[in-house]
Image (cartoon, rainbow, N blue to C red; front, side, top):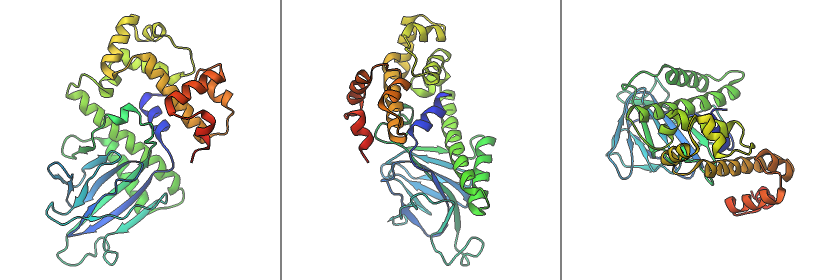
Length: 313
């Protein structure tokens, strides 16, 4: 399991959903911040503005991609001066869905002289109670302009998703889910590549590009139940114990042993939430031979004993 895929799988809750939204100007919608996760917006046709509350508005052209972290307070408008209104919450889990800001008008049949902006939007439901640091370090808004380099894999995912949402056929439910996951990973990969090209020296973008740190992370994510020592991780990384500890801590802000424990507790929470496996089995899967030791570590990490955590809504 590669680290980025593993993180997304561990953080995901529920089903992602998507909508093809047609705005017939003038329009201005403040996006809801209560959704437990992240979202994206792709401009398929026309132009619009992303309006953050405390920074300059961002012009969006056809082909631009915007990724929003959980809690991002932004609006989408035809112009920054258009008064904002609260946008309705998206349907809880149903997709594909299409929504028109003015239901009487459809693409290609808008009133004469009215500009049409078509957007592909999506929401990923992620566990915000214990967000992974890889996702935490993302900015509130990631803007990937179409004009700054052509990403064929990102564009292909967008085109396929738009096709399935616009004209759903048999199997669209499963296809859209897969494409939403694919699009999320392509967006994050593109952003990490951009950070690397800017010579970012700390954080997850740098750690995943550093061969030694990436090797240690890969070992942890491949076999989190193994009784890893820093010496063994250093051997995977081709460094001495002290050198790996220094590099890992400098890039990620914590030593390898601390991250290993954090990741084990994250996996344990997911297993408790998504399965009926006995506590002894969960403990064993995250490297604890003693159920008592596992329960103590879990309560220290999550503030509740494993059994109580499992019973919580």
